[in-house]
Image (tube, rainbow, N blue to C red; front, side):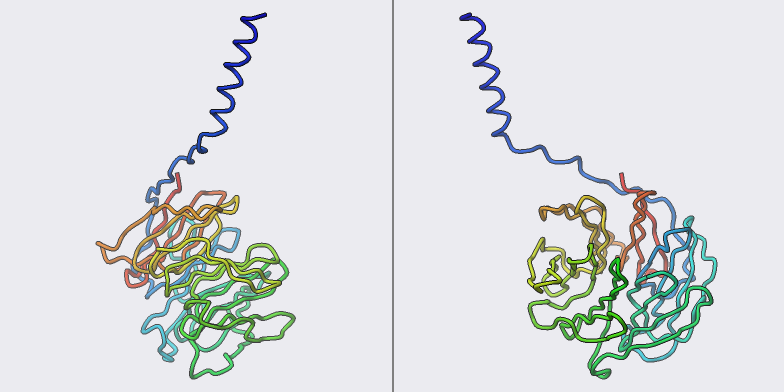
Length: 288
C-alpha cells in the first residue's frame, strides 16, 4: 500500500508539472518553390484562385494610380502556364479581386468593376464617393455575396450589399487598410500598411482589434486554416500569423528586389502563390 501511494504521488506530480509547462510550439512552416511563370505579366498586383483550375491575375501595367486603360486581367493555370494573357482588357490599374458565383469583382483606382467570368466582359461599375480622392485596393466577398473593398490612401472600407454601395467604415483607426479578408459572416481581417498590422473587425459592432503587427507594408491576407493566416508585406516578405497572433517569417525576397503583393493560397494543394509586382511574374511555393 505504501509503494502504491508513492507511485500515485509521483504520477500526480508529473501530471501537474506537465500541465504547468508551456505548450510546445507547432513545427515551423517552410516554403519550397514549385514553379514560376514567364515574365509576360505586367506588374501583377494580385492573384485569385477560382476553386477549379484557374488563377486570375490583375496586371497594373503602369503606375498604380494611372487612368491609362492599360490594365488587364490574365488567366494562369495551376502549373504556371499563362493561358490567356489579356483575358479582360481596358482597365486602368486593377488591384484586388473577389469572386462570387460567376462575378469577378476588381478594384480599378476609383471604381469597383464587375466582370462576368463566362465571357470576360465588364457588366457594371461602382464609383467611389469622391472619385478624385480614392485609391481602391483590395476586395473580399463573404459567403453571402457581400463585397468589402479597401481604400488604402483615404482610410475607408466600402461595402456592396444587396446592390447598395456605401462607405461602411472609415477613420484613422484603419491605419491605411490594404488587404481585406472576410472570415465567415461576422469577421473582417484588415492588413494596415501604416503600422504593418493585421487587424480584425467585428462586422456587427465594427470594433477593431489588433492581432499582430511588425510586418511593414502589409498587403494580401489569405486563410491557412484553423484561424491562421498568411500575410504578405509588399516589400517582399510573407508571414504566417497564428490564431493567437504569433507570426513567423516564411519568405524574404527583399534582397532580390522581388515584391510580395496580394497573395493566394490553395489549401488542398498547400500551394502559396506570390505576385512579384515589379518582377512581372507569379512564383508558387509548396507550404511544408
